[in-house]
Image 1 (cartoon, rainbow, N blue to C red):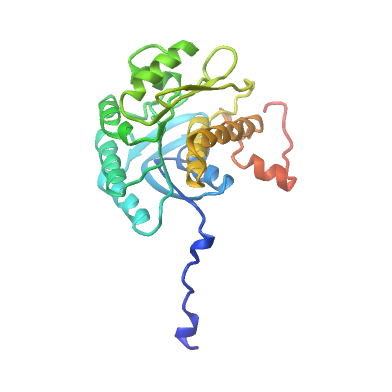
Image 2: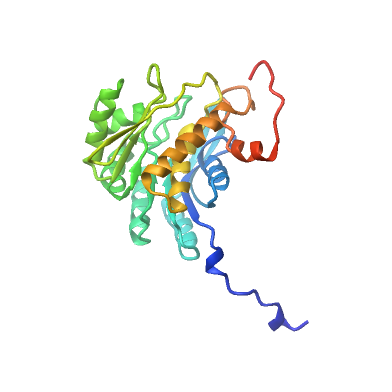
Length: 289
């Protein structure tokens, strides 16, 4: 056959799907990390690319081991994606070591990524450290100033701000302290608060409260990763930070409400719940779920 006739047609920019890049660790159990991020991107209309910072031997019961990817290879993954695709939003997760945080910050600046969501992952739900103490300082000094939004939970906000965070007023004080480190917005997640699970968004001028119903379920493995990725997906699609956060709140609430009873520990939220519901697909739940 004539090879000229089989050449691919140039890509039609009018049909371009937004691209979201996750820079995070891999969860072998599939509920958190890049696996959760890619599922979330897909569910919310973004094409997901990834740069893996660490491999974890992990399941719903906990983290059994971590193997860090060399920093230069993390940079090589980011370069490979950015040199081929227009990256519309970036989400960072588990960065583990100071040199990895450093190279991620350098790559973000080198490729001029603008819509950057930093999820300052520090510890797993099972108590395994996912960010070294030495890496925290680098994250605060080098990465947070590049973030459009940073999404700490109460524990992470407390570490970043250097204070206990146990109430809405504490969340406000911590948000101000974290904002002074350079991000354009701070989203403190209140899932561990007593009572209403209110998140708080601060843009340096106003606080926006995002209350949510507390759901009694053990299927919450990877919710932090999922929420941050949902924000990134919205940004990739052109939503502003406020609408992206509101969309992410609705998305994670439904995903948790329809959490998956897999494994013997804390199962993950149902990342594809909105698509499964639209398609009429349901699961038979057991009493143990």
